[in-house]
Image 1 (tube, rainbow, N blue to C red):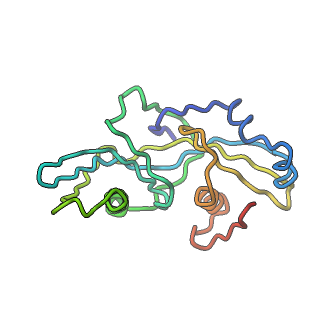
Image 2 (cartoon, rainbow, N blue to C red):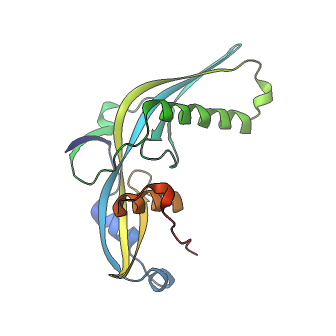
Image 3 (cartoon, rainbow, N blue to C red):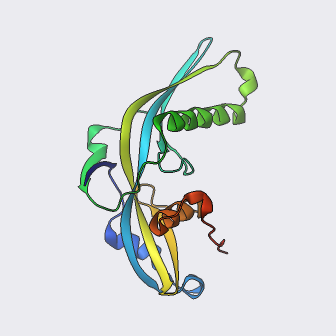
Length: 189
């Protein structure tokens, strides 16, 4: 399937180096068995805040798979060269409706306002406009251990960061074919 994705900054060799276990990590996780590039669906919103003389707009991308991953925040709309088309079968299905992801984008902005001093605003009006209905973000998954006990680690292919338990649970549930709410992944030290 051909999909539109944010341009990844992580090639196979870099992902292999970052996900390759060494030292204590190798002892905890087991040997690296392989890596795979996967794609998780997102929706991009232009979120506007209006309050008296303050008007601001930011762009937030919210994952449409489960709504649990950290959103992407852009000050300006990404340029056309930031997007690429990719042919892949490794894509997580979008499970959330557009209304659900819109609500998540609005909730994110409300939390940010509250953390920055919501009391300074008199009557904030927050709106979210869908800018890009569906696109994907590349992630790399490392598979560790043996055939009876496989563990995974997830790395964001754009930010180049190792993701936490939310991303691991999302990917593991998808790979196992079970609803995310029913997956229990052991915490790692």
